[in-house]
Image 1: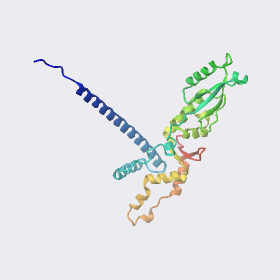
Image 2: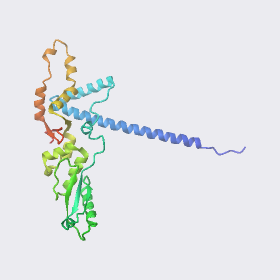
Image 3: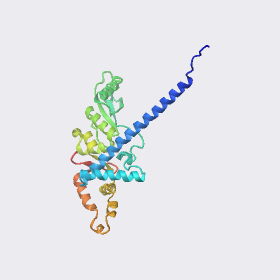
Length: 273
């Protein structure tokens, strides 16, 4: 009896379906991993806020664990799921990065302006290469000198026309990475003190608020102070209260509040800044 070759069309279909399922599972795993990383970041920020408010690290960790349990029982979303920029609407659309307009001085002095807009959040070598390309197509033969004649996306920080491209690069990268908060921190520290600011943003930035009072009320809400007091035996409740004014005074000493052009306050840890 003649044996016919086995057909594998169905097998191929099953194989591709399995690959698709595997790809979907990988995406779910990656999403879960990213959510876990973001949750750890939020817990770390919340822990630092509690410690700044005078809560011991052990009590702060226990409080965070209790909050997770309560929210799991309620089935509600974790608060603070967005970054401070997202909470204020800053990340609803891709933020255009800082840029500079470099002009050929030979052409400018000859009354024939020539230049180019350049994305500033690049390495200094890449910025220099862009400048060289701009000069290479100058109408004036042998054009070599340039200056920064305009800039955009630096949140009010003034860029000198002969600013070092290394400084421009570091400033622009920080703004592209951290947004308005980095800009207000640079305004506070100065362009000559960029060292360590990126690390300071990661370790010492506590978010944005409209007022110090709002920030303190957020701490109280995170700590669920009212729920704690109401959970005490009624006989003890008259003797327990939340001293909001004292916490406001302590926060002013421990934290640095810097105002941006829109009137929002960006909160930094003084020990890191």
